Picture (spheres, rainbow, N blue to C red):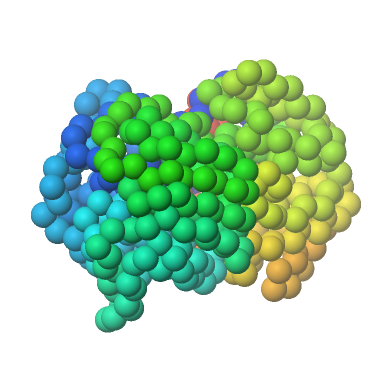
Length: 416
């Protein structure tokens, strides 16, 4: 397994581009199952999760390939309706093939999903939504078996806002008979991007980006072309990299509005932040203060930026209280940050971070995708050498992060 070696203490300077959003690309790639023909996408990141999605699509009978700057998915009649455990266990988002297969073909067999071990993240809201649309659902031998003659529109109230559940049910409802109304729908920008692509295919979706989404079912969809939105989590990670190293970094090809909750907290902490139409610039300061954050669904502070922000707060002046409300097991990076000298007192859902003047390099181990990013950030600021192991987690969600950091002046290399 590869590891990343960082020699910290150097301020980062320069410009770094943002890649396409993993969390937008995955549901959009699975949505191609809804429409036979050739789908073309731009700005699809080169990530392990994208490769896992391609492998699953190919196992079902689709072709997925890169053609220069395009990512092409060629969808014919599926040869299989089973998403096998060996593929699904690698990536939780694989469950998103359920809605499209059920809507277009009336049946699907999908393994219960895997992914990062940051919490239980049950798929019960996905399945309840499918049942509301008229599907028969049975859990057997670790698989979801779903059947229907044709899905029918319904009013569905999600008990809690669920990003994956909203995406899965929204895709299924595009080919349902009648109108579907999703209440307490998730409002993340990635859901908006998915809805925009579905509408390009001929779906009739409105209200995306709000808590009430309306889908008028249509009889068929056709392929289209689309550019994947920028990755707001990667952009936020790069902004924090500039801040934690007391550098001057401009992150381009991003959407500052998607980062508003992070930028508000960083300004409150003392950083100088400038924004343009598609860029964010952070100018580091010699000293910043601790601020409290609580994760919550969009547009509030993103859980996917919690670990990175905690790394920043380990060097703040004063105390920060970081509260995690989305996932119950998302403080696994705390023990590793403490190996670098951080002063953190974790509870089940709350971590108290007492800022220290400095961190010291040490060997650490990544436990999940965003935790690995937080350790890289801490390593950039720590004195001496930090080795981050198990960075295959990082490869699931960050495209060439070491290359982008090196371009900003970081001393970082990948080793086997």
